[in-house]
Length: 604
Image (cartoon, rainbow, N blue to C red; front, side, top):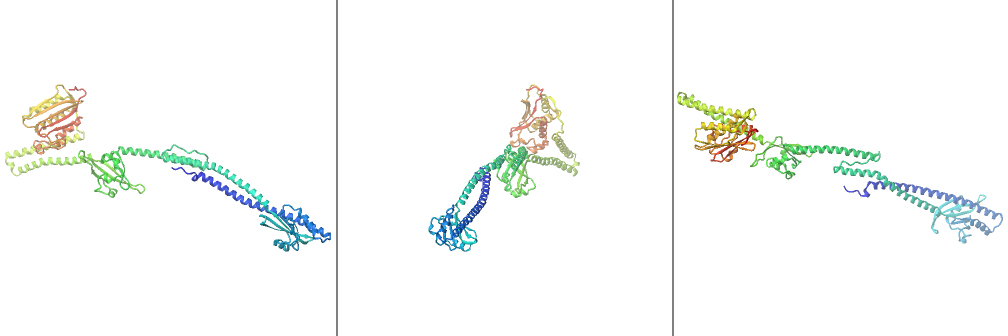
């Protein structure tokens, strides 16, 4: 935030306002005071001049009366008597005595030549004719370039008007006094303004300092610092504002802490969700994506932010943004690669935020569900097919028997034998299915016993070697010492029987089957290798799937249900082991499985 300039600050404005107010008040007071002082001074000056005029008029009238009592007609004696009275006058610019004829009888002017001559002053002549009392006026004397006050008063003797007394006095003393007083007032105004500015400065500081602190605190709060507080100076409006600001800061701190906690919770939830979440703005641009979404759609978050959600979901050719806003059903999207199958279900929901809508896309990995659903469909189809084939065969033979083949004993026995064989195959199929169902639901009990696996394995091999009809060599590569494992003998016998049976079925005449047992770490590894036709490489990983056959026709002919290896896998897994196949086309197949060694057993 930029610093406020001095001339724009509240402190300067407060000082300026206070100073202007004081200046205005002093000016108004000065104007009124000067006006009244001038009026009173002129009024006092006027009264003083009137008193002087009355006194001088009286003295002159007495002097004239005295001359007249001497019964002299000497004009010069009269002028001298009047002049004697005028000589006593002080502080006058000019004083003249004029008789009724307008002749000047005396003057205080240095120009005494005007005495005995008729006056030329029109105002004096007018007052001589019309005025019967004291009369004055203020004029500007062009000769002396000063303001003067002229006054006229009749000279009376015994009530008769004998002439006119004219007086002119300078007003410089009055206005000099006024100027002095104005100067004092101006100086006082200047001092008052200076004092006001200083006091206003400190007064403004009491207001602006808390405001400045609040400004700094507001800036700190905007930057996330809630630790600062404004000092409460007084219990006034500013103090209450500071207290309210501190309370607001505390509430903001609490709200921010709550929001931050919720944000951390949301961040943690998004980070560790098993579902992917993608959020967009109104225009469909990605603004948020969690880790799981990155994994599901295989796009880095930094590359996805700002991109269209249609693009990152790879649906821009099938859907528009408006379609997503109106979509109620979920989408199943295929993000599979050559190395991994991945199916994702996407649900879209609209987020409304004060008129600025957006989208939330929730991504859920449904690969396993889709695989289970596909396996279920395949399972139903395979069971239906496996049951339909023997049922169709039995139906055909039974129809043939009903059509007359029953009369031919040899043919009837053959047909019934085929029906019995197919019935046995269906029974085996149903039995294997029931066993698989129990293994899947963990209802099949595993009764483990501590068993010497070498002796156990030798007995099974001996049984098969004794009952085999082909010319197949059994090669045994087994340890000489006992190796103990914890197994269910019946279930493990079923596993080994199935693997050896398959090896014998697919081994050529004159071939061999190799039996090997070794220990690796804490596990026993059992291998059974034949020299049959083998399994194509692309099919090796699928031979443990239910109903899977490499050669369906041959397997069915040999009496297999396609469930033997699937059951074997479930039993081995129930023993905490693992089973796998290794094969090369035309060179035979090796089936291997592991079993945990018994803790009390002896290693090999």
